[in-house]
Image (tube, rainbow, N blue to C red; front, side):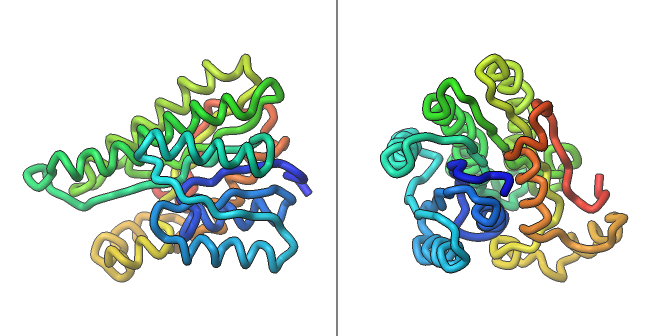
Length: 248
């Protein structure tokens, strides 16, 4: 198994892409931390599924928009497993808003989770990975390269993640820590369903522009994350894979 005995934190992994990555990592032998901010029941379901399939997982509550919560998350991971090999910065918040609808609250809700959370989780990961190094995987979005109306703050935050990935790859390379990003396209998740995307005009339009002609699934993103987490990508850092069925 490609991640045998590795320890991984996947932020925002109680559902959606994060849960898909956690299950894939566990299947490949990793001990995974299922992080959640509010969805405790969903996180525990992911832990139960992994455990039933012979894997190792624990759930930890932490709001990654708060530095104190982040510090606690990594402290508890150290107590549980002693080290860290992989961090997936997946937790994300988005709002559909026109420019005139953006408020200070909605701005910070998106930037603090998507961008600030990624920065401070990476900071703590470096401490816990130590001299052996590891892999940091950031979840970006097609919106960082081809933003749509109503996605201003989210698109800006995800563009920040693209550049953060490049900077950290250069800073952390000497520490044997690789940093890469995944840019998912339209993906079938609980969040996408809740905000009304299935069957929407936006979904239909984007599907028409997707060469592979289908939506993505968490499992699609998990396969790319596994590549970045494993030694298969030992000579890869500072890169971004857009996993969107050819949608640009």
